[in-house]
Image 1 (cartoon, rainbow, N blue to C red):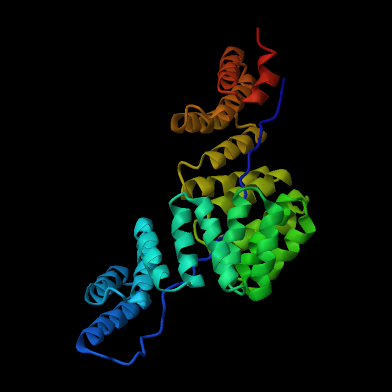
Image 2: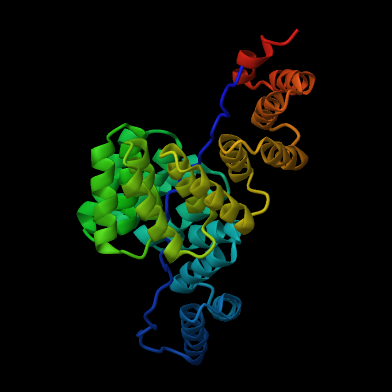
Length: 352
């Protein structure tokens, strides 16, 4: 049969920016009484601690400010922003709900949207992002995050519209260019994707995932040398970047450099020992180099980590066939069929 292993690849993820959202100004209001003065002292301490990323200390300070003055609007907002950093998303929603009873603010809606998204309330999050831009139609980060939600919903055209608006109001928004490039890639606008990735790197040349995304498009276009060079940039910027190592190995594999691919897949596995895609791909490279026992060993590792990984049974069967273990090969292919791996049907038909 002499059929080749199926090579699986993974693309780099979209990069999301994490913007600081707490107020950075201290309160300048006229002090009317000692109670208000004490509340504002705690509030200003909270702002300082937040700025220093001491979020637990900031939370304590904002709690004290609110306990003294339960109508302190900005303290509710900043306490909610602090809770967002601490992962207390239910608390964020409660604080933003309270802040919104005092006044409507794009920032309040934006922070509540972030929390709702993390709570799985995507509809509520999108509504809040829309509320934010209705109050401030220049709020680039709200368009950006709303665009990210549309991307996740595979509404790539809608995502591009939001990324366009984010870029309109922040021409140096490298993350928005990157993500717009990814949306364009999903719509097969590869030239447009490359232009956006390059623009993102012009703005910020220290974003490893952008190099990885750019390389993935170049690899898709068969420009393997360019792809390998950009994967290398990503790897140089981020130590142990196993996704980029795996993908560079895939580009080398496509270019026929199986030894180079093997080295990259091995480095990816060294960085993440349970990285099934790299184990699968290394099995493919070993097969190409006629190291069939090594290929089987990698498939064994995959199956030990995930017994339902159907492709590993397909690939192990192919390697077993090369070692004249036809019964073992057929057993593996039949198992792959049971697991729903459609490609296994191409192999199992040759079994008795």
